[in-house]
Image 1: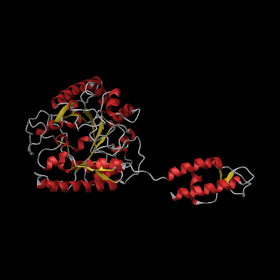
Image 2: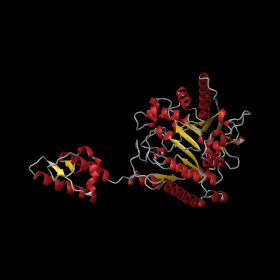
Image 3: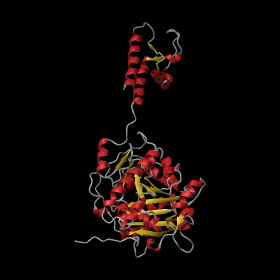
Image 4: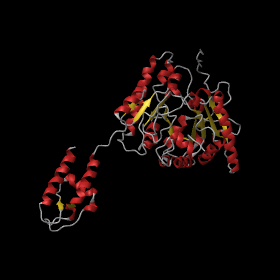
Length: 459
């Protein structure tokens, strides 16, 4: 750069002048603004020499330190690079991602399209009452600290253990995400079967699933981004891979905070998550410990992959005891096609009845451990969504009345009122009753009866 060249010219000129003098080799530095910056970064290398022009010690720099100083300063003068390379950007765009700035993205979820057509909502609609066609799936960080074998994005995104990229402001990310999401909703009007009333309502985003790809809490301004969404009356479902416990600790209230519990023990975690951190197991434990201090809804999410992480229920129960989350989601992995980054096949995907059986066994084991620990907390299977191969366990003390009525749904308007109040609040204050059709064991199997269920014809 021009600034680096100017600094080097000063350096070269002073080196030549210094070697021409019959005295201790030192460089006399003029009050050049660029070199002042270099001096301020390396004050320990400055020494006094009154024999040269009687200048102050701040104007002298030992020649043996100048090369190192110049190299470090030149590096600092380099522009901060963007997270996504042109090759990665092309790959992500090909898969339908709408990139935002230098490190964020939004993409339309297939369940948004389904519910726009009256063909059912996602498991969050069944479990928590979101409107799937008003939900925006996004991320403020395409980068992740894991390379999970079940990642449905096939590792087209960057990886990293710390934030070292250009940072876009949260207001820009939210504005662009909504704008690009609405543009996709506009395009969806041409899909056969779209219900016009729902299409118009979808122009107003009410929910944001911060789970698209990458690790959202890597983004340095995640709290400001969450507040920006809440200010627009958009609820937040934030999913973290439990590798950044300090970021979890400082999070502002989230509508629902997820921690991924991908394995029951260290060996399985390293095999399935392929983490970049050598202490990934310890980071998971710390993240679960921090859930206890959260007053809003927390979720431990288990993604079950047959042949990888389904056997050690005792290990899962021990981890859940550390966080005692409001909810435990247990979901069978979804096969997303073959990939060079993973050897998963359709055989890796559990059936719904297998997930129900595993959930029931885990619930009993967890409750036994809680009783042994003299805890008053107990869990029960509250809801299930067969289409997603998903089951949710919920705490009786937080989400179930004494008459046995589950309250896993969320009063979103009340949540936003509580956030705006600035006062502390907890789970009980924004819960809502779970409708009968959404309860586990209902004949609807988690499918909203107001929609029309379609079955594929078997060949």
